[in-house]
Length: 616
Image (cartoon, one colour):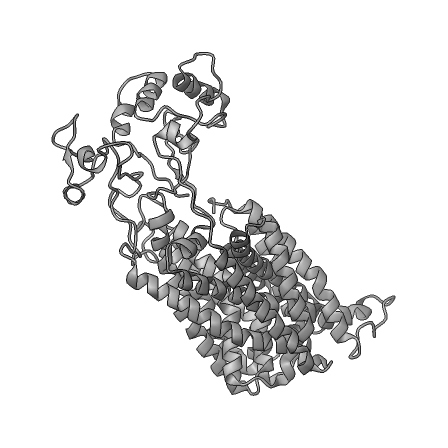
C-alpha cells in the first residue's frame, strides 16, 4: 500500500527520546488545529479515548466532540480533503447521446443478419481488413485497458498501469504469428469448435465452461468501468449505473449479433481512439507539472536537501539553524493566505522510473511490484490467445491473410492508444494525489513501534481520473475522452455477451444429449440456435452485472484492471496449452488435452487459496 510516513520531520527525533505515550500524543496535538469531527477516528476504543481526552481536554471523553473538522486534521494536522466540484451536466448529456447513437446503429444491423446463424456468429465470414483491424483493436482497447491503466498508474506508478496495454498488444501480435491464420482456415463457428475437431465433445464442453467463466470476469470489468463513468456524470449509484450499462449493451448485441458488434466497433473506434489519444497527448504536452514536484511543506516542515530549500526560499529552522525549513512568512502569512501541502513527496515524484521493470528497489521506500507486472504482461499476452472475441473476429475475416495482418495492426494500435494513458497517472496525482488539497488519509494506519497512527496511508480517489477529465482539462477534450472510454467499454461488452451466448448455446447445450440420454439431442438445432443464443445471453449478462456490482462496492479501485487479469488468468491456466496443441501437435491427444485442462485448473485454484496476498 502507499504509505507516506513521517509527515512531521520532528517525529523521528521525538520518538528517540524517553517520554510517555501520553506526553508524545500531547506534543503532536500541539501541532494540529484543535478541531475535530464527532465520533471515532481509531478502531481501537482505548486509542480513540486516549486521543479524545487530550483533544477535548476531558479525562472522561471516549469520542471526539469538537465539530468543524475531520480525523486527518485533528489527529495528524493534515487539512481536510477539499471537495471536488460536481461535473457539468453537459458531460452526462454528451455521453448519453453517444451511447444512444451507438445503440441505434447496433439495432439497425438486425436487418443485415436475416435470421442466419452464420451471419449472427461470424458475420458471414465476410469482414474486410479495415473492419477486422478496428474490431480487434476495439476488443483490446476497452475500459479495462484504458481506465484500468490510468487508475493503476495513478495509485501506484507508470508500469503498474502500462503493463495492461502492453500485455494486450503483445497478445494480438502473438496471435498474428501463431494462430490467426489457422483459426480462420479451420472454418469453425466458435473457438470450442476448434477443440471439438481434435479432442472430442468432452474437451469441447470443458473449454466452453472455462472460456465462459473468463468472459464473465471480462464483461464485469468493463461494466465496472462504464458504470463508474455514468455513475459520476449522472449522479446515480454505481450499482444502478452498472445495470443500466448492461441493459443498453445487451439490447443491441442480441439484436444484431456480430454484424452489430463489428460495425459499431468500427464507429466506436473512430470516435473513441481519436478522443483518447487526443486527450492523452494534449495532457502530456501541455501540463506544467508532469508529476508531483518536491513538497513545499507546511509550517515547521524541514526540507530534505539544499535544492528543495532554494526552490521554496526556505529559512533556518527554529530548533536547528543548520537545517532549512518552510518559509512561513512568505508562504503562509495568514490562515486565509497559506500555500501548503502534505509533505508527501520530499524529493518529488517522476512520470516514470525507467528501471521499474528491472529493479525491485526502484521505488524505494515503497515496494515495487516488478514480478507482478511481468506476470501481468505474461498472463495477458498468452491468456488472451484463448479470448473468444479475438478468435471470433479471426473466423469472421474474409481470408487467413486478413486475419493475420489485422491482428498485427490491432496489436500496434493497442500500444499507441493504451500506453500514453499510463503517463496520465502521474499527472492525475498532481491534482488528486497525496500532496494535493483533495487528498484523504487513513488516520488509523501504520502503527509502528509505539503503536501511534501517523496518517501515512493515502486513500486514492477511485474516481480521480474521471474528475481529472471533467475539471482539469478543456471540457471538449475531457468529454471526448469520456465518450471514447465508454465506446471502448461498449465494444468489448457487446463482444463478450455475444461470445458467451454463442458458446453456451452452440457448444454446451447442443452436446447435453450426448452426456445425458434423457435430454433430446436436437434440443438446439439450426432453426432455434439463433433464438437460443439470444436467450442464453440474458443470464450471463445478469451474472456479470452482479460480479461488477460486488467488486465495485468492495474493491478499492473498482476492479477494472484486476478483473481483466483474472479473466485471462483463468484461460491461461486451462485452455492455452491445448489450443497450441490443436495446430502444432502432429497427433493431438484428447487425453493430453483433458489432463492439461484439469491440472491447470487445479493448480490455479490451489494457488489462489494457498499463496498469501500482499494487499492489492
